[in-house]
Length: 124
Image (tube, rainbow, N blue to C red; front, side):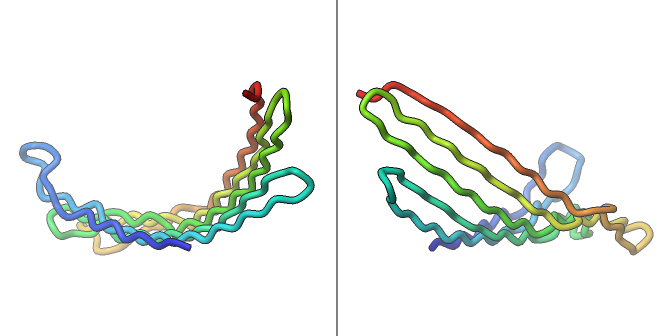
């Protein structure tokens, strides 16, 4: 199990743009592993929360929370080894702020991303 807090702080990205603060982030992840039938399995779940981005102390954007899962199997053999894995990312709705109108708008939907990978290589 791990947890990370990213403090980003403010900075001026370009001359004349103003003071930009990208917002802090907090992430936590839990990982488990086991070997069964000669196959090494690993899996993890994670959750991330993000602070609000600000420009000259006015809120401008907030990234939605993010939930991730990943499962991987490594199949070691005498002549080759192979890895098969899949990952899913679920993200809520992001929010944009309009300081001039003192209101915010949320993206129209949440997103889900899936990816699957396979690789094989000669064993030594």
